[in-house]
Image (cartoon, rainbow, N blue to C red; front, side, top):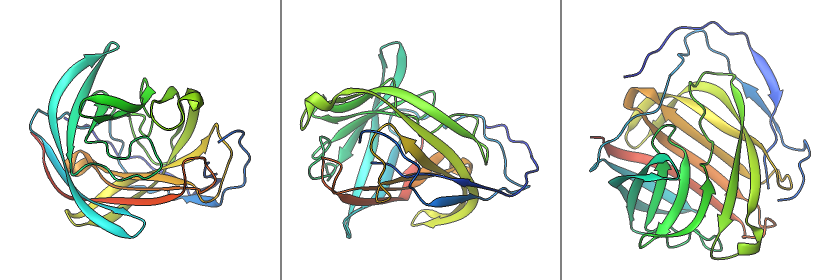
Length: 240
């Protein structure tokens, strides 16, 4: 069960860089943190049972395909409880190791992405998890996540330690095919690779339905995997 509380904030403005591979410089655009006196603090993510489904519209470079993710198992992996999802149709991401993946793994405790799968085999992973969320969530909060990235398909030699910085920049109304919700907007600020203003990664989490309702990520054509523009939006969710 979620616990929320009211907090009062001032307006703030921070420079948030957007990322690309190598070293980091602060060349990204400024992003406004929209403080809101009515923004809640949400203590943790949803906890989903086997059989939960998410239907999303995934748009890649302007072409939209509807995909269904189904939670098929909860397992133990490296001392953590993990969701295992099946995705149909498979993920489209040309040039990236997750292209053609028909499954994924997420961390139960923090809804952190762990790996993409093809017929149960890991194509690419981050250990212990991708840190797009750090609970509790509240507007203005920032954090750094550290992990080990593994690419088993395209550039195995690029596997190694990495980090990313994230910031909750807003509590805002978002409309997706599933409806209109108040949601936290969480933006990746920096990474341990070469900065590019073309690279974007942001998600919107809606406490009302305890799930992520939208994601946007763009990769630079110069990042070694090839450029791509992704947007996904929740169409429906049946959470057990």
